[in-house]
Image 1: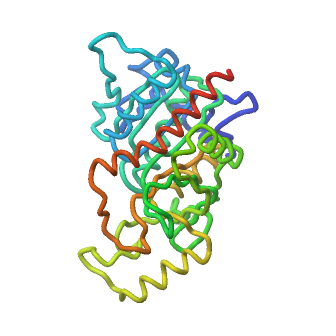
Image 2 (image 1 turned 30 degrees about the vertical axis):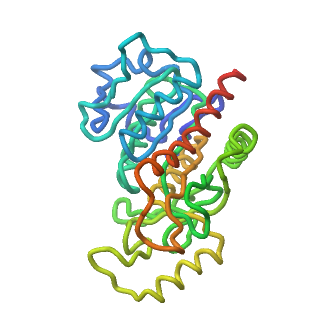
Length: 305
């Protein structure tokens, strides 16, 4: 059962033949259903899906993109979270762009991507580009630097997502669209040169504390020297940042033949410490940097179409 999630015409299709036998497809965590919602009418024009950890960040991104692409709300109107009844994720739509929160970690992101891909399928969307935008810990790079992931590895430095399905381990390569990486890099360098930017290898972990070699969790089973050796080893093999979702994002996009890229801003240099010291205003300014790159990219793409 090897069905592509994007056909030769660019339309999002499903890699799951069982969906065709459902009388009703319920996107439970988004609170949508094919029986109660007209997906084609609501989402048929979507060309870009931007995902990130928090609802507030995705709301802010929606407003930023709206400003960039000239979508004006009526006086006094505000964007609405159109999946609020699901009480899990937040989703905003501005023009042909969806911005959606995915929570924290691989499992939460994976659930969201399953349902967003089904949403796009039911809406008959074509040529959709996915971008994950978030925060990360840098390895030897200055806080405030935007990192575009070129490759992604897991905690054992393997370039694939490994997961049990029906009692057996499956492996799905975590590959990102290299042309999209280059497009985002060019946009950032040409139109937003004030923002420091690097491209490189991202480590995706399943944990924020021990999984990332921190010393400040509720428990810790290694020494400070062992932690330092580990982080320097990561640097030696080319890892420049650590986060918690890119492995699932890259593997899903690759498995489903969808264009995908990951951009995160570094909010700490892990070689210098474990706890994030920047104040709230600084963090908000840094977090806006990859959003600006994504919004500028989308504006440029729409101008070409």
